[in-house]
Amino acid sequence: MAVEGLSEGLPARAQRFAARLRGESLPTFSDLVDPPDWSVAEQERHSELVVTIGLLHARPAIDAELNGARLAALAAFVGEDRFDAICDADTDQLRAEFLTDDLPTPVELVEQGEALVERIQRHREFAPLAELAAEVLAQANTPEMELAE
Image (cartoon, rainbow, N blue to C red; front, top):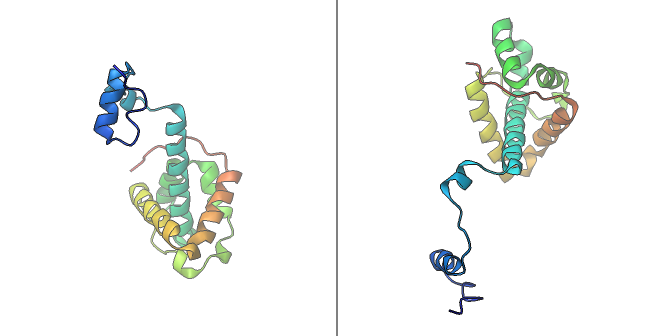
Protein backbone atom coordinates (compact mmCIF):
# COMPACT_ATOMS: atom_id res chain seq x y z
CA MET A 1 0.00 0.00 0.00
CA ALA A 2 1.67 3.24 -1.12
CA VAL A 3 0.92 5.89 1.53
CA GLU A 4 4.20 7.83 1.47
CA GLY A 5 3.75 11.51 0.65
CA LEU A 6 -0.03 11.25 0.39
CA SER A 7 -0.77 12.91 3.73
CA GLU A 8 0.69 16.28 2.76
CA GLY A 9 -2.02 18.86 2.18
CA LEU A 10 -4.74 16.62 3.64
CA PRO A 11 -7.00 17.58 6.55
CA ALA A 12 -5.69 16.73 10.03
CA ARG A 13 -7.93 13.67 10.42
CA ALA A 14 -6.73 12.23 7.08
CA GLN A 15 -3.09 12.90 8.08
CA ARG A 16 -3.60 10.98 11.34
CA PHE A 17 -5.13 8.07 9.40
CA ALA A 18 -2.21 8.05 6.93
CA ALA A 19 0.25 8.11 9.85
CA ARG A 20 -1.50 5.06 11.35
CA LEU A 21 -1.24 3.26 8.00
CA ARG A 22 2.50 4.00 7.97
CA GLY A 23 2.75 2.44 11.43
CA GLU A 24 3.63 5.70 13.16
CA SER A 25 2.55 6.05 16.76
CA LEU A 26 0.15 8.85 17.55
CA PRO A 27 0.18 10.89 20.76
CA THR A 28 -1.55 9.14 23.62
CA PHE A 29 -3.35 10.63 26.59
CA SER A 30 -0.25 10.09 28.74
CA ASP A 31 1.82 12.08 26.22
CA LEU A 32 -0.55 15.01 26.63
CA VAL A 33 -0.71 14.76 30.43
CA ASP A 34 3.09 14.62 30.75
CA PRO A 35 4.34 17.59 28.70
CA PRO A 36 8.05 17.87 27.86
CA ASP A 37 10.31 19.71 30.30
CA TRP A 38 10.76 22.68 27.96
CA SER A 39 7.00 23.20 27.94
CA VAL A 40 6.82 23.27 31.74
CA ALA A 41 9.83 25.61 31.95
CA GLU A 42 8.19 27.98 29.45
CA GLN A 43 5.00 28.04 31.53
CA GLU A 44 7.01 28.78 34.69
CA ARG A 45 8.80 31.69 33.01
CA HIS A 46 5.46 33.04 31.82
CA SER A 47 4.03 32.77 35.35
CA GLU A 48 7.04 34.59 36.78
CA LEU A 49 6.65 37.37 34.21
CA VAL A 50 2.91 37.67 34.89
CA VAL A 51 3.26 38.15 38.65
CA THR A 52 6.28 40.43 38.28
CA ILE A 53 4.38 42.70 35.90
CA GLY A 54 1.38 42.58 38.24
CA LEU A 55 3.45 43.64 41.24
CA LEU A 56 5.26 46.38 39.34
CA HIS A 57 1.83 47.64 38.34
CA ALA A 58 0.88 47.70 42.06
CA ARG A 59 4.13 49.32 43.25
CA PRO A 60 2.45 52.52 44.51
CA ALA A 61 0.11 50.35 46.57
CA ILE A 62 3.02 48.32 47.94
CA ASP A 63 4.84 51.51 48.90
CA ALA A 64 1.75 52.86 50.70
CA GLU A 65 0.70 49.60 52.40
CA LEU A 66 1.05 49.57 56.20
CA ASN A 67 -0.32 46.07 56.81
CA GLY A 68 2.75 43.86 57.12
CA ALA A 69 0.69 40.66 56.84
CA ARG A 70 -0.59 41.64 53.38
CA LEU A 71 2.93 42.47 52.20
CA ALA A 72 4.26 39.23 53.70
CA ALA A 73 1.61 37.23 51.81
CA LEU A 74 2.70 38.80 48.52
CA ALA A 75 6.38 38.27 49.33
CA ALA A 76 5.73 34.62 50.16
CA PHE A 77 3.80 34.22 46.92
CA VAL A 78 6.48 35.60 44.59
CA GLY A 79 9.55 34.91 46.70
CA GLU A 80 11.33 37.37 48.94
CA ASP A 81 14.21 38.01 46.52
CA ARG A 82 11.89 38.97 43.70
CA PHE A 83 9.63 40.99 46.02
CA ASP A 84 12.68 42.94 47.22
CA ALA A 85 13.83 43.47 43.62
CA ILE A 86 10.36 44.78 42.74
CA CYS A 87 10.42 47.14 45.73
CA ASP A 88 13.88 48.37 44.68
CA ALA A 89 12.94 48.81 41.00
CA ASP A 90 12.84 52.35 39.67
CA THR A 91 9.21 52.80 38.62
CA ASP A 92 9.63 56.57 38.13
CA GLN A 93 10.22 55.87 34.43
CA LEU A 94 6.72 54.36 34.09
CA ARG A 95 3.74 56.47 33.16
CA ALA A 96 1.00 56.83 35.79
CA GLU A 97 -1.44 54.78 33.71
CA PHE A 98 0.84 51.75 34.16
CA LEU A 99 0.46 51.91 37.95
CA THR A 100 -2.33 51.36 40.46
CA ASP A 101 -2.97 52.25 44.09
CA ASP A 102 -4.89 49.03 44.74
CA LEU A 103 -2.94 46.24 46.44
CA PRO A 104 -4.04 42.89 44.97
CA THR A 105 -4.29 39.55 46.71
CA PRO A 106 -2.09 36.83 45.20
CA VAL A 107 -5.03 35.54 43.15
CA GLU A 108 -5.91 39.04 41.91
CA LEU A 109 -2.24 39.59 41.16
CA VAL A 110 -2.22 36.73 38.66
CA GLU A 111 -5.45 37.95 37.03
CA GLN A 112 -4.16 41.53 36.75
CA GLY A 113 -0.77 40.35 35.52
CA GLU A 114 -2.37 38.25 32.77
CA ALA A 115 -4.50 41.21 31.69
CA LEU A 116 -1.43 43.44 31.60
CA VAL A 117 0.57 40.92 29.55
CA GLU A 118 -2.25 40.86 27.00
CA ARG A 119 -2.30 44.66 26.94
CA ILE A 120 1.48 44.79 26.50
CA GLN A 121 1.23 42.43 23.53
CA ARG A 122 -1.39 44.65 21.86
CA HIS A 123 0.00 48.11 22.70
CA ARG A 124 3.68 49.04 22.35
CA GLU A 125 3.32 51.97 24.77
CA PHE A 126 3.19 49.41 27.61
CA ALA A 127 6.61 48.01 26.61
CA PRO A 128 8.47 49.87 29.42
CA LEU A 129 6.51 47.83 31.98
CA ALA A 130 7.61 44.58 30.32
CA GLU A 131 11.21 45.79 30.04
CA LEU A 132 11.32 46.68 33.73
CA ALA A 133 9.81 43.28 34.61
CA ALA A 134 12.54 41.56 32.58
CA GLU A 135 15.20 43.55 34.45
CA VAL A 136 13.67 42.60 37.82
CA LEU A 137 13.55 38.93 36.86
CA ALA A 138 17.17 39.07 35.76
CA GLN A 139 18.19 40.59 39.12
CA ALA A 140 16.10 38.45 41.43
CA ASN A 141 16.80 34.93 42.48
CA THR A 142 13.26 33.67 41.90
CA PRO A 143 12.35 30.66 44.04
CA GLU A 144 9.21 28.61 43.44
CA MET A 145 5.99 30.54 43.93
CA GLU A 146 3.35 29.17 46.27
CA LEU A 147 -0.24 30.27 46.19
CA ALA A 148 -0.96 31.87 49.58
CA GLU A 149 -4.43 33.25 50.04
